[in-house]
Image (cartoon, rainbow, N blue to C red):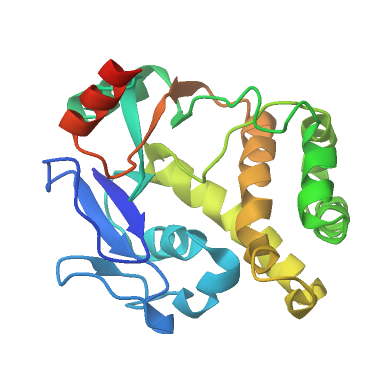
Length: 248
């Protein structure tokens, strides 16, 4: 079992379990720098050079093609799965917790964000922030090559909540099945998009699309999902947070 902590730079680990949590440097082929004990996404079979448009997906791709762990997961250097989340204390997931959860559920995902789309549905929010080209072309690709998923895509289009951050924990065979489908869709989309017409933010397009597609895939597969809160590490010490809480 391994939880890969995706990062594009050096960071201070917040979990003291190096056997379970493994830092992974993404965009290494583009010059991103980490520490010697980080796995680099430009080793073995990889798409590290696509990191600007694929974001953390270059890490997912590396895990899919190269990891031999029986259970794999994704955290980010500032976002972590936790059992419970409050303003001061956080219990990060342990291998025992994960094994217990996966006996009952197929996948651990971030707690569904009920207000993530600002009271818009998923389609309108995506189009308002990223344009309609990628949305429409993704649906066309599904209709042409993965028709069993069109109904699920249209279902998700109307949702006002969803799973975000491209974070997950599951058995490797489920992870592999998802990645085979996801990267198949994105490979086709990449051939139909010219990202040079977009600003720097929206050149991260395939990362944004994939955050929507995980919802489509899970709905189609009717997977049993264990939702866990996400703790965002802002770099402040516990003492600083206590002082801030007292001050308020």
